[in-house]
Image (cartoon, rainbow, N blue to C red):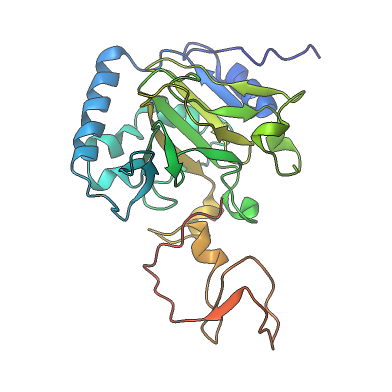
Length: 287
């Protein structure tokens, strides 16, 4: 019955009941010093090994363009394809505990929903998805299939306004929400998560969150993310797939929606097209 301190942090020594109560109410969780410096250094070095081997435009990644016209990687999907070590980190008991706090039947998405992934924050991104506006991770209507979706992130670098950070709209996972922009935050319970290397963050996929541009010209925050999803996600979305594979599934005539809508038998309106469907085609993310 007391006001919730949205700046509260936890450790792994705190009881699950306390962690769960805060997570359910606020929609996020900040667990300090879950990984020790040597572990963080080893994970960071392995991530850099994977990143150094990437070719610009690699299909399992998100690429952005900076002000100098260079392509920079901003998200690496299916990390396990380049590193057994990074993929298996999601099986660590600490990550499993936090990913399954809300529901014990949640499973780590190792082979779908982009698998284990890394976000890399870059400065001066002028094109691409390096800086994400307010959004939810369950996309266009994916809530019944994908939620409760949990995102568990191991912070490899300091997260702050200069180096890049996640901001969450506390409690927004519990309500329907109108679209939100960076200019609409005044008076709302927005929390900027300031974390240190080794901290772990947890948030519901359907809590509103954003990653604004960092203010430092040499920003480079890195975070490893592991998703946990309920049984219906695995029953509906195949290995290697994403929710968009369901959203943009071709009908019996081979037509594929290019936006979310309802088919009509004689539909010829803009927004639909007939094309050959390549099941390996990367449709992007609904969110």
